[in-house]
Length: 84
Image (spheres, rainbow, N blue to C red):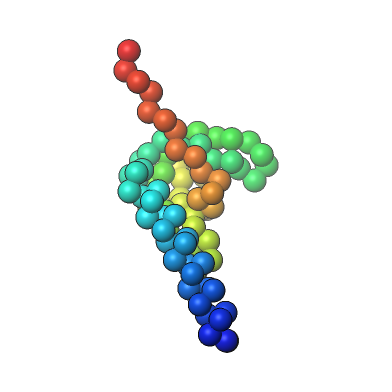
C-alpha cells in the first residue's frame, strides 16, 4: 500500500473517530434518538452503546429493540422536551 493511500485511510479513520467522540460527549448511553431504518421508517429508540468505529470504516451505534448496529449518520438525537 502506498504511503498516500495509508495517509488517506488514516485521515478517514480519524474523521470517523472524531464523529464518534463528538456524539459520545453530548449523548451518553441511554440517550433518546431516532433512527432511519433500511426500509425508510423512522423509529424512536435509545442508544445501548457508545458510538464507535467499526473495522476502521464505519461509525456505528447499537440501539434498543433493533437488531445489529446502525450507521451513526442515520441516528439523530431527540431534543429534550422542556418542562412546563
